[in-house]
Every structure is written in structure tokens, then in C-alpha cells.
Figure 1: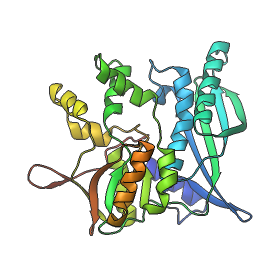
Figure 2: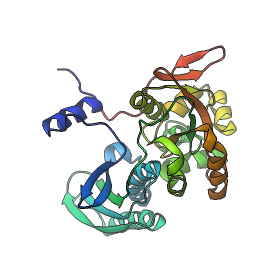
Figure 3: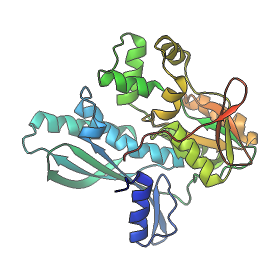
Figure 4: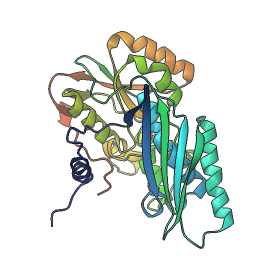
Length: 315
């Protein structure tokens, strides 16, 4: 039997549901009368998404944050939410209160009204979150043009280290360890930056599945070549990778869980973007440029090398 990957499974569902012209996007769009509704749904599963040392409050918050990140990339404010939970029958009251605390924390942070949802019993904890907003338009994944600049809304790679520390695969202490773990359990999507600057973006995409996945998908949909000449990593991460003999590119490009986003802009908007980022204290980083061709390439010592999509895959 041939093993199906996530992309193949999605295509089977879309074809079976009559959506033969489906194009992958961060959010879903539909019209309700004259209003264009923007929605996003995401699922967090205990066995695959909650490391043993992660608190339930942080996990519940993160289940909402995962959807907020997609809204941030599109420059749209999420307004309402519906949450379904699957809980073990013997779950304690204190754990349920921790979950509620996490939902409340995320919804308060980003001004989201939770309308209701559904509860069910099962072998493990599962959160399914759907958020809604409205907008006349969104920034798509496919709009980049030749000559555009490529930016990200923050550094990458810390989540890879943080996850290993939470899983006990590595032992580390001090500020770097705290920073890495925090990046994993307490991500903060740059919603305000997306809202303020969407009119300048030619394309954008959430990066939670890994930077290599995001860049390849944007390149593919735009039918353009992405040249990456600046790896978005901090000096502390570079030093950590070097001292532990780890591949920096793997940490930065293939880890995932950052909940930052990638966007492209025309050079004429560069100074406006930088000014707005400073005012919002958003650490944007210019990592490359768009040109004619196809594929994603990262600058090595002597030449550019292909950056394959090796981000997070569910299947």
C-alpha cells in the first residue's frame, strides 16, 4: 500500500467534495450575503502536539494562537471563535480549569470572543479551534513579483532547540535554554504588524510548519524563484549550533512551530515596512529576494544551493 502524505490526503478530500480547483491558503473565505467571512480551523492533539513538560494552560493557549498566526499573515483581525474539546473521562477539575485559563489568555490577548463549541470524551486531549473574521480581501500566497524583497517577522530555529529540551533529548540551562523553551510554548504571532502593513505585502504565509515549507509553497504558487541570502538566526543560536555540532540550516529552515510569517514587498515599500516594524517593536528580517524562475535557493559559501521542503509533515 502506498503511504499518503498530507498533500495527497487533502487532494482526495477536495476532489471528493467537488473542489477540483482548490488552492492551498492560510485561511478559508466565503461570502455571507454581502459580507466576506474569513475562517481558520486548527487541531491540537495531545500525543503529537503537547510535549510532556508543557503545561495544559500553554497548550490550550497555543491551540488558539495557531489560528491567530494565519490571520496575522493575511493581515486580518480574528473576531470570534468556536472551540471543540475532546477530554478523557477521568480528567480532573483542576486540569479543566487550566485549559479554560489558556483559552481565556489567548482570546484576551488578541481580542477574540469565544462563542461556544462542543465537548466529547476520548482517550486523549484534543482541541479543535475555529476563528472567524471579515475582510474585503486577503494577501495570498501567490502574489510575489520579480524584484520583491523577502522578509520574516522574527528569528527562526529556537523552537527546534526548545522542543528537544522539552522532550528531554538535550540538556541545557541558562538564558538560551529559557529563551528556546519559551519560543516553543509561548509563541506570539505578529497580528498588529500584519494588520498595519497588509496593504504593502505582495504575498504572505504563516510559517508554523517550517520556513522551508513556507518558502517553497510561496515560490510554487507565485511561479517565481526565491533567493535566500540571509539566514534569520540569532548569534546565540549560531553559537549553540556550532558548539553542539548541529546543522544551523536544519534548525532554522526545517524546525517549525515559530508562528511567524513570511512576506514579500516591493523595494519601494521597504523603508515604510521598517519604520512600522520599529514602531510596533516587531523584529522583521530581510532574508532574500524574488526573481524569475522556480524553486528556493540558499546562499552557501560559493554559490546558491537548493532548499528542499523538509518542514513538519503530519503523515
